[in-house]
Length: 64
Image 1 (cartoon, rainbow, N blue to C red):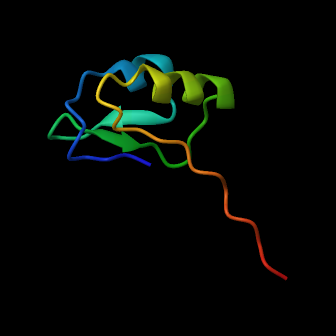
Image 2: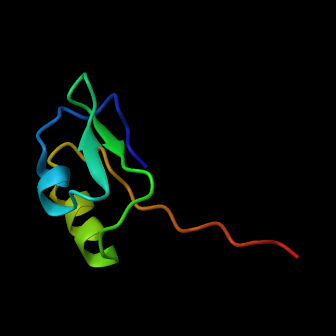
Image 3: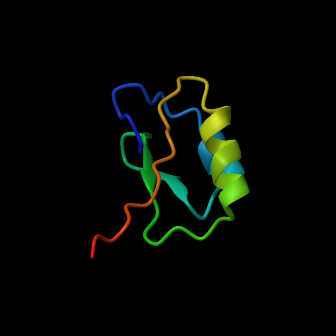
């Protein structure tokens, strides 16, 4: 999850997980579709965000 109100576009997420995060025209973080970085790299990118604008969300489980 990306909180675009908190994002300042520092780019640390793009540095740590460039195949998951990118910048848009406003230099705000956006998710690549589909993401291709390892889970650990994405977690590092989330932790590195100085504004706390990123959060990991557990995949939703299918009900059945």
